[in-house]
Image (cartoon, rainbow, N blue to C red; front, side, top):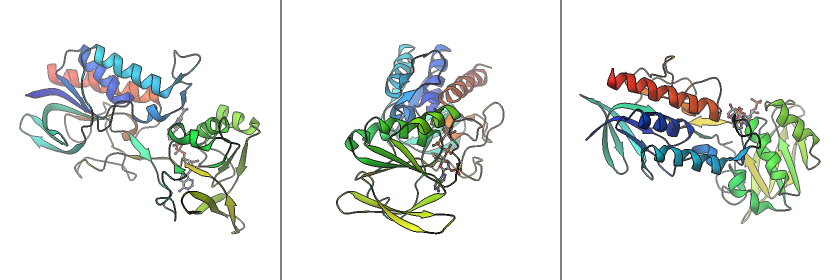
Length: 304
Ligand code: NAP
C-alpha cells in the first residue's frame, strides 16, 4: 500500500492538511505520536481565531478539528511515533513505532515543544512544582504562590490564567519590557494578582519533595535572592520537533525547517507546515493556513 500523502503530526497544521487532502480524495494518513490536538490542546483559551467571538477552549477547538477531519474520512493513527524518513524509488518510506509506511508525498507538521531553562533543579522538579503547561497543572496551585518565567504571549496568557486559580502570580522576565501582544500586557498590568520581577533570571529551583523556592539573579545589579514559591511555570519559547529528520533536510540555526514559498523543503515532495517551519508567525491560524496550502500543493503534485 502506497499512500498519496502522509502527514506527520496532528496539530492544527496537520489536521487542516488532513481535511483538505481527504476532501480532494487523496489516499491520506495522519500519524500522531500522542492524540490529535498538538500544543493547542494544552492552551486554556483561543481568543484570536476568527469566527469565535467569545473565544473557545484549546481542548474543544482541537477535538472539533479532529472530528471535522474524521468526518471527511481522514485516517488518523494515534500513538504512532515517526522515527525516520527515507527516500525510496516511488517517494518516501516512513519508519514509525508501529511499522513502516510508504507515501508519495510527506508533510512534516510536528510542531514545537517548550524550551527548557537548563538550570539546576528544573529537571528534578518537573512534575513536582515545575511545569510547562498551566492548563494541565494549574489546578494543583489553588490559592498558592506561583511564578511564570518569560515575557512572550505564552507566558502572559498563562499568567492571566493562573491568576484565576493561584493566590499570587510573579512573572520573572529577563528584560524590562514584555514581548507579548499589547492586549495581553494591558490585562496583566491591570491584574492585582500579577506582579513582575524585571531584568532577572532564575538560576536555581530548590525544594525537597516539591518545589519550595527559587534563586533569582538581577542582571543589572548582579544581586541574587531566594524567594519562596510553590510552582514554577516556564514559557521561554519553542524548540522545533525536527530532530528525527535526516540531517540534509535544511533547517535554520534553531532547527526550524526551511522551505520555499510553496512550503516545500529541499527534498522534493516533502513539505513542512506550522510551528516546525521557519516562519514569521506562530499562530493557530497560520498553522491551519499552511496545512491547507501544503495539502493543495500535494494534490497538484500527485494528480498533476
Ligand atoms: P516567544 O514569543 O519566543 O517568547 C519567549 C519569551 O521568553 C521572551 O519574552 C524571551 O525574552 C524569553 N526567553 C527566551 N529565552 C529565555 C531564557 N533562556 N531565559 C529567560 N527568558 C527567556 O515564545 P512563546 O511565548 O512561547 O510563543 C511562541 C510563539 O507562539 C510566538 O510566536 C507567539 O506569538 C505564539 N503564541 C501566540 C499566542 C496568541 O496569539 N494568543 C499564544 C501563545 C503563543 P525576550 O523577550 O527578551 O526575548
